[in-house]
Image 1 (cartoon, helix red, strand yellow):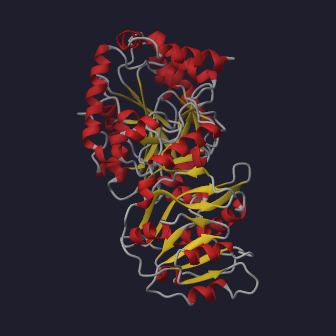
Image 2: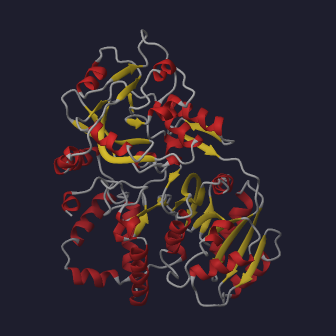
Image 3: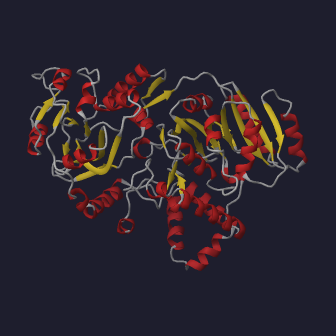
Length: 558
């Protein structure tokens, strides 16, 4: 019933003149009520139904037909390994029609071992890795071979093909996303690879394509992986043994790292906990007054957190409520807590930079005062990621008070700036490509709960307190850290409440709006390349909603 009412309200809003709508938005209470009502109604910005997705995909295919047929370089020759059985010879027949020079089927009983077949491949020709039953678009080989010239391996988007030739279930993938590979094995078919790399691996008859990609990524630091955002591979519906593939990837991770991996059967994802040296973590929490919020935040950290080597720095930004002041004085007597006064005007970036100056830890944690711990091992997982050599900023899964998603990674380009992936989705929704329940890489994460090495923080001169005093400072910071050559991580195993609507109002007053627009303009100017194409997103997905829908007809015209 709530969904029907809110859909009616949203439809009615579309009929209101723009100037009147802008005036209504300036009413903070009205705007807050509307946002909360949409979230509680369960609409979560209309996650697309399968029927809607199919309609959008059909239109997408019509509009992008020319992209498939775009002329690319000439092909000198290629070869293929098909993983799994091809009892009727359908896959091999289709590959031969596309001009394959050599094709080995790994799962057929009359074939030799996979390792032996790979040794017989020509090093001078690229090799396609394909699962049995999958097929290729007629232009796939030319696109893949052309892209491989500047890379070590190439993968593409996929869809499914039914017996009537109808295409459905598109998987629009991000650019190379190592954490998503470890947690979901998202690259599992349609890989074009330089043959010498393939021959460098220890192969068994049980080896999977996802396993090969994972092992190469863990053993070759300079590995160049390219992604083509075109569904060039048509997967066979329902054939993949997902849990077996994850187990194979788990084995590779544990062979080459000291990480502990558990396979979550409920969501079919790997949970990777990275070993660390138990570094001191400094959790920096700015506040002005807000005793109830601070009490819930700090007590939840002290009572629930299993990782114990941390300190809490409460940065008091001019509190004037006696109840809060008395409580903060009490906190200052606790072993793990220090209260530090910061009497200057509010500037989120400056306050956190000030807190870092007083922190003792080699790992820094930026934490809002309205955060509340849910999962006891939150800091264990986050520290494990933050301590890794190739990781920069680490963010958490944050929930509104009603348990819907507040943050599960930041996507550049939403609304012309940046926004939260899967915002307002239910807590246990898996998300697009399982990106709510699986740890994966995003270009940025929110600083409402963010961990980073002190060395990285100092290398980029901390948060930008001159240009970004309130909005987008965390996005800017994450992108600067990413520029150091590391990846930022959304850690799905870390769940906390972020009582966002309780702790601050909406930026809709004229003064706040002007400041927000200045900071948005700074983001758009400084990070225009990421806004134009966020590598952790896919250019075929919408930037109008945080729901990972395919671009609409209006967007495709632009």
